[in-house]
Length: 85
Image (cartoon, rainbow, N blue to C red):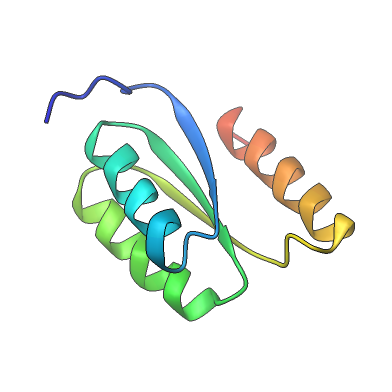
């Protein structure tokens, strides 16, 4: 697959399984750096290893999308990470 998304960052919620997991892997294979978000940290860690194997960077942010403070944390961490912080 061409690295069409090289230099881009994507946030994927629900990344621990199903469509979210598949989306994160596809984005990584296309060259994007990926922020993965879901409640199950152990599954996110396993996915992060796969993303790294695809040659992309990955940030794991565990949390619950139904909790606004968790979404704030996701956005703050993703923005700081994308800016190199």
